[in-house]
Image 1 (cartoon, rainbow, N blue to C red):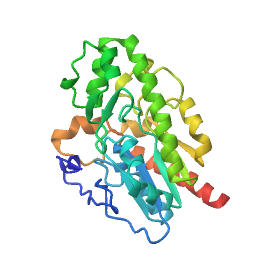
Image 2: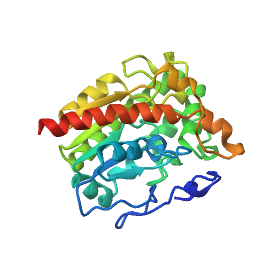
Image 3: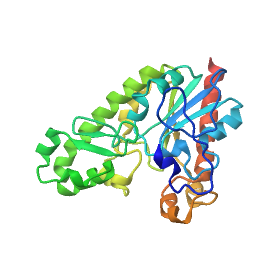
Length: 281
């Protein structure tokens, strides 16, 4: 993916591919001919600006190869529609799936790029009918689209949110069934896992994972072995960009991301959950 090489600073991500997948993932490439763990997720799993993201820290702690399938700005579609990645995850001892937002996926109202899921492609006829006054050609990203729709009509926007949540649940269920029973969900966010209205959150449309509620996660619990909640401590959040590696032009971007200490805490929770699961087998 092109964005992997855009102004990422001095940190080497050693991009690599697996099998027939067209997505470039963070390397170095891990071996698949012996037991391994797989990690699916977005920018946090990829570890942008982070020398040792949580999959690498888990690998060190458990001394088992961890395949990082993190993808910048990814939604579910990038993985669920990739047979190679699904096959590799199905063969893993365990797959950890970072909970991603419901904004970056194709649905009845709009389509996104099949791999770069934050890219808005086109609005469906039904969305054009709901929002006839919106000029959709001006939107290149899903974030721009959703902001435009919400500003135009918060009341009509509720219809969009409902559709995105339904599409997210259906897509997640499909993906988890492809991966198989050896799977964990990871909530890695500074947002609480609850059923609060997204509009009431300070971050609103900038919240991640966007539009996901605790009840939606509960619907998926029968399909996974565990749900790991990794909400960074105040001390971790206070460290900000300390230890992150980024070019000066990306400082504002880095400041909005979960930092080094947040990854350490997430890895610690995952290691405990994975060890508990291994010992219970």
